[in-house]
Image (cartoon, rainbow over all chains, first blue to last red):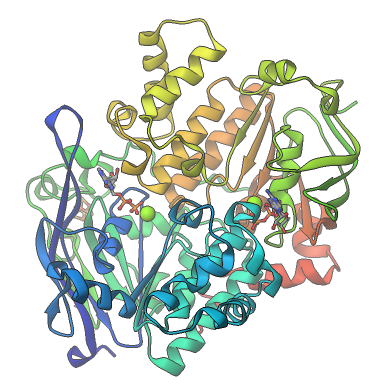
Length: 319
Length: 262
Ligand SMILES: Nc1ncnc2c1ncn2[C@@H]1O[C@H](COP(=O)(O)OP(=O)(O)OP(=O)(O)O)[C@@H](O)[C@H]1O
Ligand SMILES: Nc1ncnc2c1ncn2[C@@H]1O[C@H](COP(=O)(O)OP(=O)(O)O)[C@@H](O)[C@H]1O
Ligand code: SF4
Ligand SMILES: [Mg+2]
Ligand SMILES: [Mg+2]
């Protein structure tokens, strides 16, 4: 299903450390290797704070890793500077987790949406209003919203403005960081249908961070599970249900709320404390919370290993 | 009389009403969820109850009665006395509500010390304890961080910890778990249920996760376009409702093993 020659973005050995209080160091991404394929969606799931956004921000050059490279059409984008960097922004766009904090509050919606188009000379000033209306309607918002400000809109409306802005440039790769979490499920469905349609028509590649496993499984070709800065499982999208193998992925599934669930059942959630990325346990990052933890798990870190077509797991159980 | 009575309120930000003829009542220890269309006025309703409508927002008709008091007549001083202690709110996006130039610890200890006469040191200790109860690892490091250094989900847990510090009688939670992974969501859901069971806290929960709403709620209100479109208990909403919009929502819920678009 995944052909090496369709790799459009190749992240290799990405590590990012942040300085923390008391001279300590926090590892937000630890030797992450992920491939994005042309016209396919990669879903990234994992505990909040595990490093998902940190990783995706490298793709749009908002931050640089301490180690590793990200190849886009053969060029390491983590090293881009100046005009090359600016031009590259057209190709890879990101929709942010909280759009309210990422835009100038004095800008009207029309300006927020059309800013990148104007920056790259794709439209004229006089075309702004018509373009903004068209894009707003595409995400099911009334065209009149072009005159509003971000702070006068509901959470879900703001999220859709962020999506419209990113889609405006028709980028080759689009990264959506929890971009539909504040939408009602019916609007969310419309947005997913819209982006999968664009994907079919224009072959765009999507990176999608999301906590809703049901949603991810509905349209991701590939799903990566991250835990404490490490990728612990990568699998084909349809496998996220019964086929997932890593004990952490299985724990995620056990805590999903669904309208078809048994409402009398006790909620499952991992009871033990999440270790801090400040003191990463030696060995397997999940070892202190894993029901299957063995002696070896505490000493040696398991690496990703192929266990089926397009399916890799980092766990000593599958050795 | 119920602990909270919202009687036929209309709310507007300008000339046109945003929410029309909204009523609900809530007893001690009960949970009510508001679900429905994005932009339908869910946040507006709970902000009105909390007396914190932004901008030109105003309740133009109706009445809100909490523990026998008419909230719409409250003075600033009266509000200060109950906010955070009797009634707390957890916002949709706690990150955006935090002062970006202040460390989390400074904001949190200040919050604690406006509600309680304790030393700075004790306040810090209490803050760390609450953060760790919300499963934030290294509470001390979180206290030392600026909001931008925390992930969205971590900021949300800080907001939840603050809202729960004084075990309020009424907790208003606006999409408290939308930014959280499923295991943390499950923990927060459990913590809210414990608050209800152990302290009789009543909760109004806004959520887009119908599974969470169904699991937690005694009553579910479906909103659309500023009005209540449908309401009832879980059984009614999930299995017996004949409302077309409720059906549309239920059909759009993505389930594991459900429809795939690709
Ligand atoms: N400060 C404001 N000034 C003017 N209009 C506003 C303001 N805040 C919200 N609105 C409008 O009021 C309506 C209701 O907004 P509200 O935030 O209550 O929606 P919501 O149901 O919480 O939606 P969501 O699920 O997307 O968060 C929306 O149409 C929104 O655009
Ligand atoms: N600018 C920063 N400075 C210091 N620490 C950061 C910074 N950005 C993120 N972190 C830390 O890195 C970890 C991963 O964060 P993030 O990638 O935002 O997580 P998420 O998976 O929820 O998107 C967290 O522990 C967070 O506190
Ligand atoms: S390597 Fe060991 S501790 Fe880690 S997930 Fe597998 S069984 Fe659990
Ligand atoms: Mg994030
Ligand atoms: Mg809202």
